[in-house]
Image 1 (cartoon, rainbow, N blue to C red):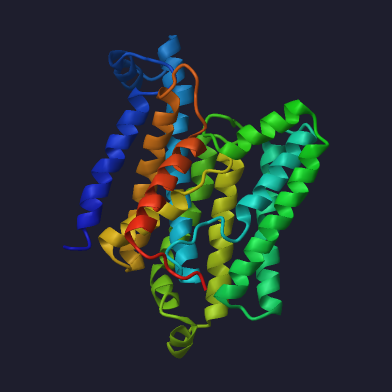
Image 2 (image 1 turned 45 degrees about the horizontal axis):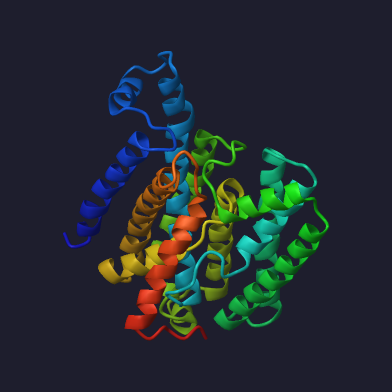
Length: 328
């Protein structure tokens, strides 16, 4: 029964966040018109078009991206054995940013831009795993490899932007801020078809995450190869993160705040922690994106600004109350 308590709280919270996302947004639509659009699918009118073609796809994308980033955060924290790790620790965000910036400068949009961004993410995690395999596959090596690659990719990105036009620089910066309303390259149904199976595969590794969090030596004694498990989990999590980065840009702190907060409330059992974090991540990003749309309406803030502010305040409070864990 205790294992069900987090879900008794989080499922209604997600439903509430979905309702808020549907009824509130960048355009002020009366609640009666929203209900009418939901009940009478296919009816004519601007309100109906906005609900079905803009707001519902955005709400679905927000929920999927939030769940994915939070779930990947849980995986990275278990593999690195660091509760403050995040999906971007391995340089995945820097690789995706480099790919997207290159695509923007080349004048590519839509699926080609997504492909470039995704290729950058895969390049980053591939190099991290290759470096870690050549050396010793340890937490220290993985983190150092990610940090080094982040600096390298950031330097290359700044070099590209220094030669780009002001228009391309502006577009790149807006993308790097993170937004769920800036891309139409991947529709919400396609995103769901890709993200949901990967998320389910990650949840199948919940028991393995419990083993890895015990340490390499204990994992080996229990009959598992920790290096192989880490490689598979890192590839899966990075693949999922790369898809989210390609669709929404850089949305920070979701994979950092949510797993840390849920772990405090639910404990460290990944069979509960992973699905609970995904539910909480969906709710968090949905509410953050809704706030980003309405806070300075009719203008819209990048959702990455909202998550960055919340994340900064959260960890400032954390640092004032507790001693942060050692990274190495």
